[in-house]
Image 1 (cartoon, helix red, strand yellow):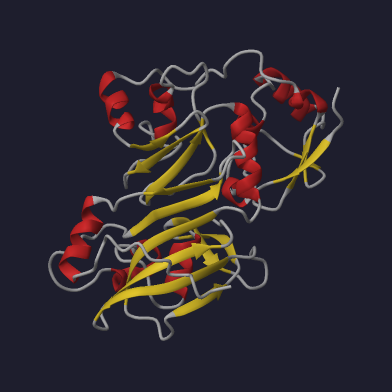
Image 2 (cartoon, rainbow, N blue to C red):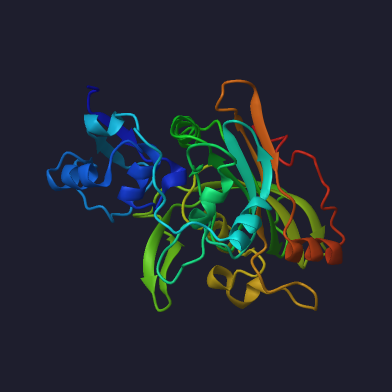
Length: 329
């Protein structure tokens, strides 16, 4: 039997529940065995006992017992009901790339990736409609916020999910977002290096800059086009993956993402008619080594309708295909 492993939580698993983290990475570990390992202290987080519903943070170390490394003997059963015909057709319409190992979706804004309190319709409940003849349902390997649109990658098997998990944990994955923000940054390119932490406020939990206790969070930005001094089209490259990182970082430099009232307040709502009061943040591009070991996987996703309309109103070229970070080392 394999030895105990100490596995670091990747940036893309930040804020995931401990039990879901195990289901994603170690599908061979059944629920009962997982609960027993937690009760007996065989599973620990940063050396301490933890409960199944504990939320993980990127950089934490998880003690993985030997039995978790056992191969899955049968496909992992979904927690949710089978998707109905309408949901199946809907989620299949989101596919923008597929091969034997991965499926890439263009997630629309407003669709949650996973379920939660008061969230009954979410992508995770529809994954069985994306088997396309495979024995296993595809597995989520990273997430996007509910109101963020764009490229979302799925693994078509547990082994692929493990390889992609390691890739996302390292620095070999390049994720580029497009955002419409209020105002124009003073520099065309820059680096936002502001640690982030969670705080409870009058409207519930939210992320905030926190120089004393926050976790490292770094974002590169590049201005692609501007609309006078009113708004800018930014390319954003998160080098870390904290919750709401791009939204908090843009607000922190006084250029909140358009439509992001949570972090930008009224300044996030651009003046004039035609610019939707929805979040203008889109995961445009994903580039990483293909999990098969053959070449590179490069996927891009078209803008959602409300952002495409804003680009049209502002005269931006949404077919831009340049590299906004070509001059950044």
